[in-house]
Amino acid sequence: MSAQFPIRRITAPQIRARKGGEPIVSLTSYHAHTAAIVDKYADFILVGDSLGMVMHGMDSTIGVPLDLMIMHGRAVVRGTKRALVVVDMPFGTYEESPHMAFRNAAKIMKETACGAVKLEGGARMAETIRFLSERGIPVMAHIGLTPQSVNTMGGFKVQGRDEAAWQVHIDDAIAVSEAGAFALVVEGVVEELANRVTAAVEIPTIGIGASKHCDGQILVLEDMLGLNPRVPKFVKVYGDLGPAIERAVADYASEVKDRDFPGEDQVYR
Ligand code: KIV
Image (cartoon, protein in one colour):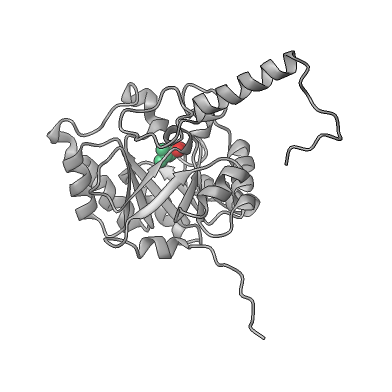
């Protein structure tokens, strides 16, 4: 009789160990059923605060509350069994002090059972990243275009077009890596800057609009499925779910109008 071992989830240290190795596959997901599909292919799944814009129609991620992240985080953990689940810390829940960040990160981890949190910011967040990682909370950092800073950046702007600014981003990457982050999202930066950031740190870089020089890639699931009418230019779209959903809804509406809807004795499958 053979022993049955449960499938183990990928861990933050395992992601960290992938630096320079096989590219790391990642997508966002916000619900149990899409997460179950993504789980078969992704090394980690991010419950990103982009859910405020993608699912809840917000103009930015600034207004996303902690409880919403926890609710979606729980759904994704429930729907998955293999990938590492990372939950974003929303704006205003970590910047003030390492203690505040710890309280909110611990709440996210206890209430969702996720394996790590992500927060935005480079050198200015290094002390907080060290504080959390030394206390049992794996942290993924996020530099470059950081959407929670949309108001100080003056929009969602590609970073590093001016070479004079590259060193700041490279220093940010080194600071978060040395502080103990296990991986680093690099968003919306020019290709050569992504290359230099990746070469400068010992942790894997996960690009989004940051080129093949990164150690892996993340995309927002709804963007690559063709569900977002405002998909960023750098996203390759692999599906056409928007039009497919519209066709199905239109067919349904027209059948209902023709009174073509079933009784309980009619079986479709
Ligand atoms: O919130 C999010 O989905 C993200 C990814 C775009 C990296 O931070």
